Image (cartoon, rainbow, N blue to C red; front, side, top):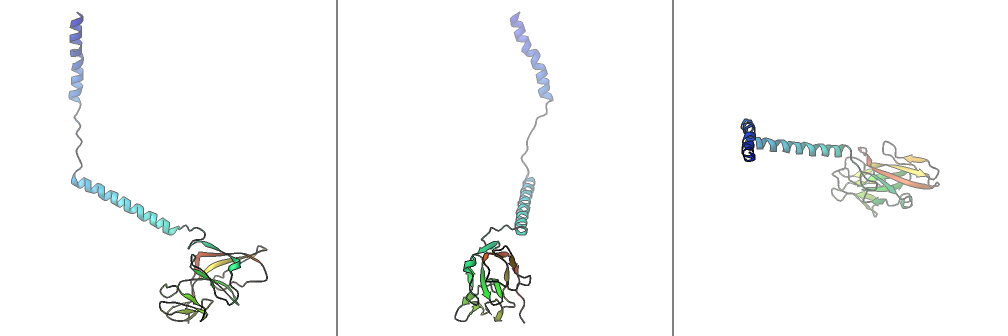
Amino acid sequence: MATAESTTTPTALSAPVARRAAARPSVQVAAPSRREFLYYIWGASMALLLGQTSAGLIWFAFPRFKEGEFGGTFAFNPEELPSVGAAPTSVPAGRFHVTLTPDGLRSLYGVCTHLGCLPKWVPTNNRFECPCHGSKFQLSGTWIEGPAPRHLDRFVTTVTYADGTTAVTPTDGGPIPLDLTREITSIQIDTGARIIGELHP
């Protein structure tokens, strides 16, 4: 009897299982067609391009400059301030020259306003001279001669005295009158705030 039950039970149980298996649809996964594959590649390429473009625009619109690198603020040592009328102090990392004339302090952008060459201070002639096309500028950055259309550009500079008072470059880029009888504790030059030089006559 036990043998009969053992032989009939699997048969009784297998019928519903067989019916379910027969009712279950077969699932076949088809590989994407060539057209679908090209659509996927095209979509991924467009997403990548848009992502790169967006990141570049954000970086361009909101640049971040560290202190002490061009585009940021430079702490200029007051002890390196040139005497009145002396050769300028150049800071290559900031691409500027600090000059002191009888009318005050200027931070001049060290790039020619013609085609972007780098004028050098020529002590024998007491002026800046562009090695590319011969533009010449006074110690104050004022144009003397040559194809440059305007005076040298300036950077906004903040001078802080020991008593906490400050003097800032005027909005027109003019000099900062200095009181050399007072102690200067810091000079901050913002190379991210450039004032375009005026057109010369």
